[in-house]
Length: 456
Image (cartoon, rainbow, N blue to C red; front, side, top):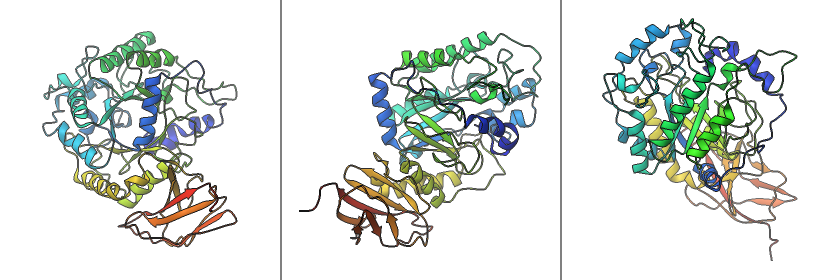
């Protein structure tokens, strides 16, 4: 992930430039398989997932970018391997928590930018089996997800601050890790193919691969720069084709902050709902692919012992609802502690969301975005003949739905208690009486049963 404290200095110029690039043809040279199309539909309906940032980087308690931020050399960082012994990790507890929160899938870090592999890999000695723990984390999570009916996505970093054969001398990060040898880039590509083959061959059905780090090899901004020019050839279609060949249903997303590339199956937006760019990382245009917002509960992805800026339940609800209002999902992140325990502030909020979805889930799951994009007052979702009006803004007053595309409102009621609501519809404008969201009940959902048939 892009660290929030570094974005202004490391990525913003490049990302702003990319926002005006000529879009790639999304379907050029790639035709999704029937299994993939079915998986995309499932993903679109799922709406809520759990992101897990966890690994040896959790031990210093400064987030997942600690190796880069503190210029820790490969030699010294490797010592964390001997400290990482998550004796309190329990896959059943983690997956059960996601399920209780109303989440339908989990995206697990398998290898972050520090190069540590969380599974029993044959292609790197820097892995979980060489720690005092000596148990395959990916295996445990995969088995438990399959057991509990939660689909598993695997985060995999294209960037590596550790390996010599990664093109570190042309990359934008990881300059202070003490590497001097310039290895063979093609060896690194083969290494990634080997690891991806392991992950997609040995752990059952994998719902998706979540790539990150592509931005590390983007060329410096210049007037001569070509669309999507990079310093290194990622062999990206070779990687994508390998994944789709091994598991045709497996969805591919890439956190490159650009228009989706051929071979990708969903588009993600970092720390913002699609169409917003409050954090300066998600200005890319919304594509026709399934969409996903990834966001943190505090301001950190990996465990940060000093970050106590936790989002309120109302803020998390707004992220979920506005993502759904754009037809997308929310992938909500936790950064467990190095011992494998999930800190109580995260647990409390996930349980709160689970309780909220028991009441309001019908307005989220299996819905599409409404005919209006999210507004200041809130947003719309829809499912069949039901239009859900999500009022998030306190003191918003009556809600006017301009250019209302339906001719008839058959009936209207509040979702939480089935109380009827009096709605007026005249001259193409539907007006809903003022609602009263509160911090404890932050989304007042009014359900409209609508029809395009004229009454009588």
